[in-house]
Image (cartoon, rainbow, N blue to C red; front, side):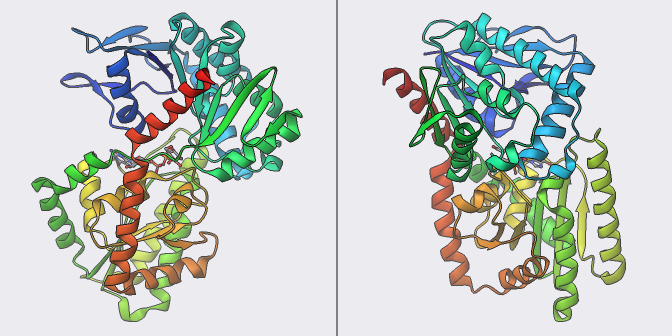
Length: 456
Ligand code: GDG
C-alpha cells in the first residue's frame, strides 16, 4: 500500500543546509509511513519557483512532494479567506469573527478541485489517500467522482461544532457533501463525531446508524482518533544537557519560587487575553504571593496578515503592559511575554521548568501543548480549559471553564498550592494517557481503520 497525503502545507522545508523535514506533528507522524510505503504528499505551493514535483531525499527518493501552485489571490481567498476567516471561527463557535465573502468560497472550490486533480493524477490502484483538515472539505468528493473505487480518509484537526452552529455557514450542505466522498472521517473526540453525524442527518437527510453514514450507496465511517505527540522525541529533548542548562537559566531569569507557563499561537481561540486578565485578578486576590510567582506567556506569531489577529495582539500587549506596570517592582516582573517563535528544544526547557502550565483556550480541537507539557515535566500541574479536546483526553488535569474569570483566577492558586502527592498522581496518570495517544500510534490506528474499510 502506498500513501497519498493531501494537506495544506508541505512536510519539508528549505534550510541553510538544504531540504529537510518540517518539525510539526503531522509531518513527524506521516513521513515515516511515507518513507516505509512510498507515496506522495500533495500540498499548496506558495512560492512560484519551487518544483511542482520533488523527490525526497533527492538522491534516493522515498516519496515525492507534489505542489499545487496557487496565485497570491488564491492563497488570500482560499487560505486566509475561506479557511481562516470562515471555517476556523465557525468551528470554534466564534461566529463574530466570521467574514463572509462569496469570492472566498469560489476560490476555495477552485483550489480544492486542483488538489483533487493532483491526487487523481498521482493515484495508483491500492493506494490509500489521507486528506487533512478544514482546508480540503470539497476535495474528497471531487476525487470520488473521478475514482469510485479509491480509498479516501480525512482527519479534521479542529472542533466540529454543534449542527445548529455549522449550518450558519453558507453552502453548509455542499461542504458536507464534499466530505462525504470519504470512506472514513476522523475527529479528535466523540463530541465532534456526534456533532458531525447530526449535521449529516439533519442537513442532508442522510441515514445514520451508529457511527456510519449511508450516503449515495456507500458507507462513510465517522470515528474519534485523538491525536498525540511524538512522545519519544519530547522525552529525549527534555533530557538533553543543553535543555537542562536552559531550564536553569530560565529559573534564574525569572527568579521566583513559582513559574506559570502559557504557550500558544497568537490566536483568538486560545484565550490569551482572558488568561492574562485572570492572572491580574489572581494578583489582586493574593497579595501575599506578590514577588513569588511569575507568569511566562509565549505567543507565537500566526496569521499576522489578518486584522483580527493584529487587533488581538494590541490587546494582549496592552494587558501585559498594564499588569507589569501596576504590580512589577525593581526585582520582580510578574508577566514575561514573548511574541516570537522558539525551537522545540527551547520549548522543552520552558515545559520542564514550569510549575504550572496554564492552558485556557476558549475552544480547541485537541491542544498539543498540554500533551507536550505532560511529557516534558516531572512534577507540575496542568490547568486545562474544559473546552478543549485535550480535556477529554486528560481527565486528571485541573479542569476550568475559560469563560469564568474568577474560576480561572482561583485555579492558579489551587494549582500552586496542590500537594506534591496529588500533583504526582495526576501527572503520572496523564503521562500514561499521552503515551497511548502518541502520534505514531495515532497514524497507525487511523490507517488500519481506513484499511479495514476496504476489506469490509
Ligand atoms: C491545530 C488545532 C490541534 C507553538 N509555538 C511554537 C511551536 N508551537 C507548537 C507547539 C504545538 C503546536 O505548535 C501547536 O499545536 P496546538 O495543538 O496547541 O494548536 P494549533 O496550532 O491550533 O493546532 C489543535 C492541532 O491542530 C493538531 O490536530 O491539537 O486543536 O487547533 O506542537 O509546540 N513550535 C515551535 N516554536 C514555537 O514557537 N517549534
